[in-house]
Image (cartoon, rainbow over all chains, first blue to last red; front, side):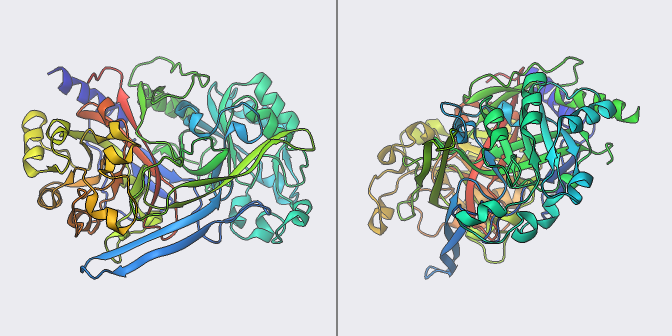
Length: 280
Length: 280
């Protein structure tokens, strides 16, 4: 009897405190926005991994090798693949140890860091005419004037608008060349180191993400925003998709990376749950 | 004002309909069980990927290559790795196309299939003395006698107890040999094809998972349970961890795989949210 009461309570939680049955059909087809039992929409913030995926110009790109595809001699169909990749490419997470010695590796990041209330700072208008735009302290304080103080334990997402260029490397990264000489040709927005410091010293956030290839802008040489954030065990999500489908606040983020022992980062599946009654 | 009301509603959803603030500190360390803002515990059902990870005896194993680890000449620390792997190894998902032509590939699986109410069928007592145990229709109907009909759109988890052997291949798979000749030496529990058929024809589930290397038992030669389930676009989670930490029902599952275009499967991060007041 106790269990039955508990289950009723749980249903309450997951359908928004209304006594109705969640009416989700698993037969619906995949899309970037799907209905969830959380009485909201699931938005997939993840780019698909393929040979088109965007990687750092010096990093090993994603490669899928077909092992089997077709009917077997026993009469059933079978397909399977192998793949190779750098940890940092496509939609992925930077674990703290990527730029901070003795900080957490990918498997050591607490799940509580990766699940929570999201907010979005939209700087896409500023980045439209400036590929080297860096999100500033003023962008955060302006957001706060409209929306109140960045909540404690928020997951902060920066929308530069560059996701619409993905996976066109020339438009997204600033160059479609590869190798060491291409690094200086990278031009895409990021987070100003001073703004990273402001976040770390004045607010308490769980994690941060953006829709470009790096939390430091393309022209960075010392990756200071990485160092500042990761040294505080604040992971960064990079090459995030579909931020234009999110409101500025009031949504939940669930970001689950591949659990690589000792990993400095890795492939990330990141989704948002946006309540039905929260419009853009 | 409308937004503020909406946010209050959302907080309600996520803290279990009690008007209190979630007190989650992101500073807590990683463990298999963590506190979540869902007023419950997050349980990580994922084995860590490493060279120890368990793969099918004929599949390419996980391999991590260090690209960088240490201080750079610019004065900051930097670490990065590449990795190679079969799609099917460690804690992973079988996409429908793994055993069903024209069925969904990994990137096509709707997220609604992967997030939802979980139930657990515990057959670990039966599998203890029978490595070749196959979960039967009777196991499901016995569960239903105790707990009611398997809910529509449930995510069904089968606990064989074999997770405790992971990653010891001899104990977990039945052999630590590799290659084609090792296939016939595989001995671990799975799901009886008749029980897969019963599920598909009599119940409506979203997805299924278990704590062994395959939804078909080790001695299977035609992988019929795979074919039956995947043909209905019901994905299977394999090598799932920590099922012993779950109650038999009343929890939520969030299973987010790497989003590989055309993938037949891939690395999976799978977690459960168990309400605080739901004891084992």
